[in-house]
Image (cartoon, rainbow, N blue to C red; front, side, top):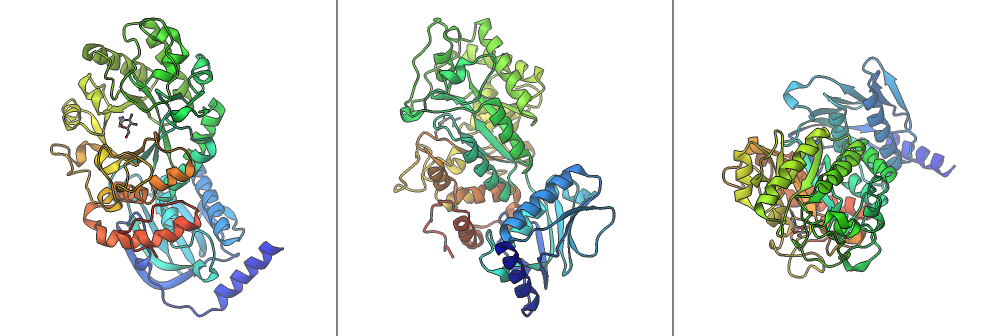
Length: 508
Ligand code: TNX
């Protein structure tokens, strides 16, 4: 009854009040779209609005359902989803069409008085148009009047196809619910990758049925000695599905041959001396290594890669490869080359931290630049693509300034403007846009213990990384961006995000 009363109330308000002129170009979109044109009128969202999708396209039905859930949450309305074989006269219409100039992920969002029409080549494009549309509305309907959507047209497409964040669930464990919340954050800013750092010295976080002690022992603790945790394969599949429904691809990482103490503590045979190590709950790096000349090591990796690959429909498998400080150089090269063969055999493409460039990258391999320019340009010279994650600009675990109570600062402080004001295509000499797959902002969690702390390090910087990955550099500048970001402060509050209120941003 209450819901009915609210809907009737909203309807009366929106249909009786005077139509004031609107200006779609004044909406604070993040990421900033390629073009926005305003026509000054309003589309009224009401109980009578139907969400249509082009008949016969299953993915569009799923996208339409997503829109309906989001709009229903915002408005309290109960909007119906319906297939149609021709363009309707009113409502919201999701459709597939060949917009060649806007690429795989581009879209056109046309908002008229009676009809909101989305055209895109893919369901992903429709999904991004929906995110743009949702940013014209409040996160929660606190004022009914704002269920008016300003009319106009947005034509839009991303600069890079890989727009990601990494979450380290090894140093501190984050449960399924936390991970889903992170996926929602990514989706609302048109990011499409969640890289999950699933293993490290301090914890092994994914069930491997053929090697059960990995989680039994290796998953039993975390930094600081807490109880750790892990995802069962069913839970992990649930995360993958949730991500898929939001156009986010999960990139699983098993870090090796270093950063492997949790596995070495679980199985004695993975150690060169045949003795299991002790569990580790500190924060040192670079002290562990798999035994690179034992067959069992590669049998183990084959099993792990096979089981995880079967759970992840995305094209990539991240093999880590960073900071293997106690692995001899030749052993490292031999190891990385053998592991790449295993990844390839299981049908996945290799990603590794920039150190893997020192081995022989396989066809289609990508190096993730985090600190070493020489490694990265070596990779490019050997034919790899690059993911840009420069620690001094894009590490979400770096402190904002010297007063930040969480995080590290080995790569410097990253205030919100510093994190925003760089261009992936010009940051490193010799690495240009053609070499770059995209950008990723990693959150290492040595100091980050729960979802509130995660939010504080991630927000508001994540919005900036989303914009760097999406928006053309000539449309980006800090002085204008900070005003749009300020407007998003209200969205963060309504989403109950515990964000850092940077003094550089004039929060609304
Ligand atoms: C370096 S970045 C690491 C991680 C740490 C991080 C802390 C990288 C590839 N390795 O093991 O967690 O610094 O900022």
